Image 1: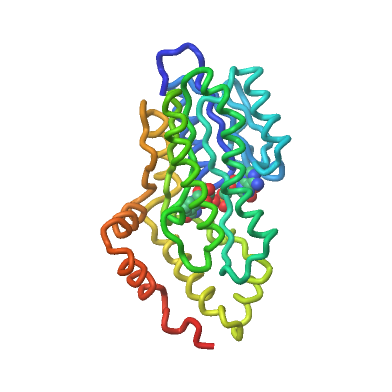
Image 2 (image 1 turned 180 degrees about the vertical axis):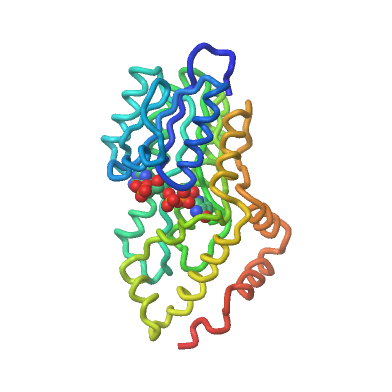
Length: 298
Ligand SMILES: NC(=O)c1ccc[n+]([C@@H]2O[C@H](COP(=O)([O-])OP(=O)(O)OC[C@H]3O[C@@H](n4cnc5c(N)ncnc54)[C@H](OP(=O)(O)O)[C@@H]3O)[C@@H](O)[C@H]2O)c1
């Protein structure tokens, strides 16, 4: 974090009204006590009321703005206002995201595009809006919230993984592209976070039908994976607050790394992927899927 410059560092956070985004917002507000930060917390228009419910209101050094990340006009409106009144975005935190639960056979093209639009296309579009300013100032940070799902894929989470793999690939390229201008790119990779986010996981139209119909050939896939993910999230040692603390560390770091593990599970999966021979890795994960012998028995 730049504590010497007289200019306040402007931090733009997407999806900041709940979950990890809200935890990041709270820690950033705390950080304002000893660092010169101007926060721009954003949420979809329908979710803006949550800030007030969480005692977060506008004041000097804290703006609250509507931003549906998939809406080009809203993206430009926020970034243009920041550029004209505050001199530009110094730190962009692309946190907003959704995670469809669906097997590949149950995702339609519009649903696939919707998932990719929120988790992959929109973070890059926002980066494209703020990058000319960062390059001109020769400083900046792009922090993209990825996932363990961006390094390994789980059944029933196909399009989610595709979106995070895409985000990882583009961010890795961006890391090299922006180094010459002293602009850093960091992927935060949370594994399971102890939260109720699994209750909000949307199903596609067909995956909802399959999940509810015991006669559907994929019913066990959904049934066992849903229970497994729910249990894993209830027991996860990582919380939105612990992952948010890692984001703050990245903000403070002069030269942050490309990838930061969000928790111990992310570190373990990354080690497994690197150490185990590829065939054995896939075999090992397959046979450890919950009640795998019951899958596909219909
Ligand atoms: N929860 C986990 O275990 C976990 C694990 C790995 C990675 N992650 C990643 O962490 C990030 C935050 O997730 P979370 O766990 O905090 O989930 P969450 O509680 O469901 O929060 C998701 C946030 O994204 C926002 N959002 C969704 N679509 C949006 C759009 N079109 N425009 C703007 N905002 C939008 C939501 O806003 P609304 O409230 O308006 O819908 C909400 O603020 C995501 O990128 C997610 O993929 C989460």
